[in-house]
Image (cartoon, rainbow, N blue to C red):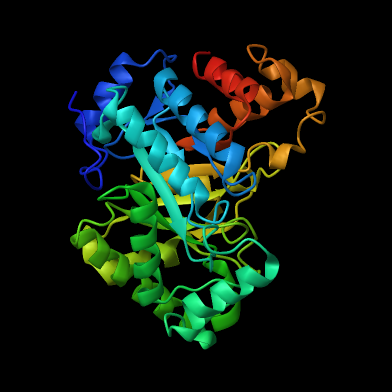
Length: 362
């Protein structure tokens, strides 16, 4: 396994060969690794949304990622907006250390990050007033973002996303991000209407195809909250077919739209249980529709911000006797769902990390 010096960004990306190598030596149970496309991904991924910027939470996330990489979890899901960019930096530092010490190689680890929400940098802004001034100066006064294209603090303009990708690559210390997801595109659908949204999405995906061509990202996707989960009669409903048609228009049959993220778990089960998507005159759930399409399906919020703990019904617990406690049961439910590639769970406390490691070996 090659070691990397600290002289520049880490080259390479996750590869089929690398992820197979990682899975072959991982101390995880059969079925823990899935292959939605050619990459082998672990059924559990580290999420980094929770916590305060910097400080002790940086150290906890760095330790958590190292432990999970050693235990057989090769997916990390972060975002520029997570803890005001400090989560990406913590992930980058942990990954650089893991590669330098020979724990993993770059081609074995799948790095997912996201952009689309205007995000301050914790190095330059801490108070509410400082954050406001920083956002205005960085994005509006600079001309990077057209105020007319701003919806609920989110933007899909190509020049904005190119800037965000550059920031994420710098924070992570990576030449290439494996999956780059656009955050909450359904916000723009509500604002622009179907036709305007389609045009904006094609423009966005064309810019992301260009980022792929330049080696800045390997693939892209969308990170939704309720867009894929509401019925097709709702104004914020996001059609899987429409999203993929936009990718086809932007990148032809060789497009690089390869990932979808949405909330899924015991508390938010619509992704697999609700037939929200129109499919050939019938309806189907999002997860059902994406099976065998080569799409990485990431389930977020499996513990519903921790609120599921203490509220898992006894009959559900009984269905997963191999688990201990509500949190493990909820994670097992989500990762056992056919069509879900990996379940993203925020882990900082060592006890929670240990519980996830135990589950990966179950």
